[in-house]
Amino acid sequence: DVKVTQSSRYLVKRTGEKVFLECVQDMDHENMFWYRQDPGLGLRLIYFSYDVKMKEKGDIPEGYSVSREKKERFSLILESASTNQTSMYLCASSFSPVREQYFGPGTRLTVT
Amino acid sequence: GIQVEQSPPDLILQEGANSTLRCNFSDSVNNLQWFHQNPWGQLINLFYIPSGTKQNGRLSATTVATERYSLLYISSSQTTDSGVYFCAVERLKTSGSRLTFGEGTQLTVNP
Image (cartoon, rainbow over all chains, first blue to last red; front, side, top):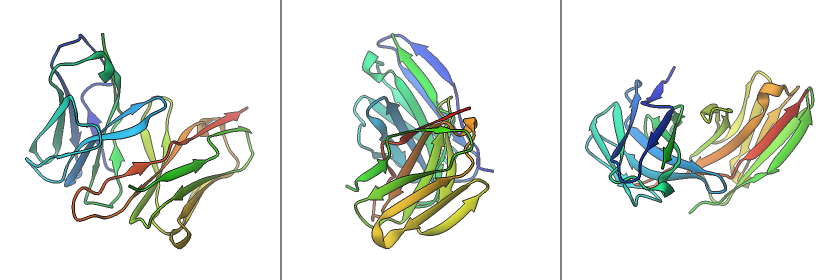
């Protein structure tokens, strides 16, 4: 079975802190994705990566950066957390484009 | 980009009832997935079904790609089926293809 894990289920940070969200997949997938989910706005793609050290902006990249130094790990970075980044963050991976995406359990981030 | 519409937005059932959820999409796609979001927020894969019909226990799905819709059938519903069901589609592009999600169907199954 594919397994996608995220470093924290719940996280509380203060405004201005640098925040790291980690995602690890164990199926040698090429592609990894970060989404955020907000009530009324659905799931929105933040960044994705098709290969190590490669990244592409999704629909809402402002205020975020990413890092993919190893194939199995994709990190989302909030350089200076703000209250409007309070959200549910979901990581996903897939073998290749248009193949099945698998999601991690999510991280509920609260920025106070 | 591709538009994805799910219906109904909300559905309330009694345990044991059957239901059909619909997903319409605006362009041809290479990937279509159905997910169930559990109460803890995780998206659980139900079906990867860009075309054809699949069944898994009480759940089945059919995608008619030429008519741009997919249906998810839930039979003999149980309270544990409650949650939000999402349809998501993807069209292959030379770069940057990604899943586009519908707004979901909120299903409540009462005992």
